[in-house]
Length: 313
Image 1 (spheres, helix red, strand yellow):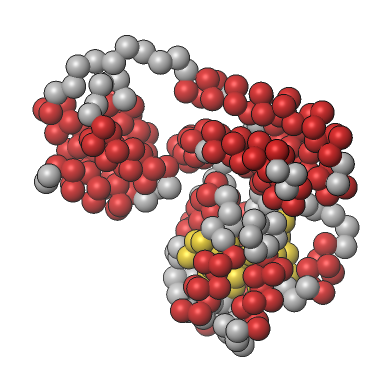
Image 2 (cartoon, rainbow, N blue to C red):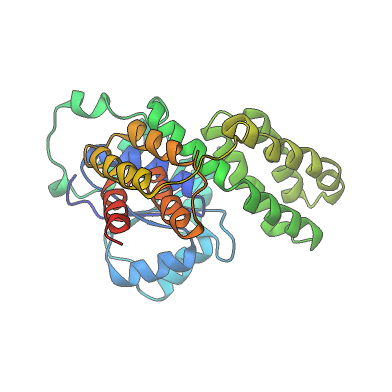
């Protein structure tokens, strides 16, 4: 479906990454946005075949966003809007259709269910025949260890910020955004197999939906403690830093460019991990951090460009 126009709206980067990688096997890359307001801007600029819209988002949720898009006349006459939700409950499809959606998908997104949606709503003239083995052999994201490691890195990198937000929402009695935040944590923790955290978040989400502050105050700290503690599981202990030489950086950047050009995640990450062993100056560290973030998004072209830019400074 190389000419498919798809917009994906979700406030969690991990969910965007999973969907992007599930869709790229159909020869298109969806447009990705992290908020309802960004979605409104994109629909003003482009007509889409399908919009996959997360329901629970801060500021504007998916239902509110869809209402505004329709009110402003930004929805194409043939555009279909599919709700995304981490809550698989009876009557969900009917509920979302009553709110103006055309269909719904549960998260984490199942590859076969996604394919069904794409075949159902992408215009038939945009669907080309392809050997089924070309697709089925490359349809699972989490079975690919490289991409799972990228998900883990994103998850770990957002721990401090997410924990801080949860604390803030609890301290200000903002039960709406607290519930949205633990709802997202429930989904993303499940993606990397952290089921204990996912279950604790799910219980807090249910308490939030019920307005049960007693349960939240009693169990919030337990979730946060476990959430913060898993960083060491993935990052390990810090080692003494080596003295940094510019020649080390130059060699590393050449290697990163070479590996990124052949989409070799493991080798590129290995080079970046080697640089982590050095006491790197702050300005250079920021450049390396940017490259790592681009790698975690599997944007190999951007990785190569960023590394080249650093070489030319």
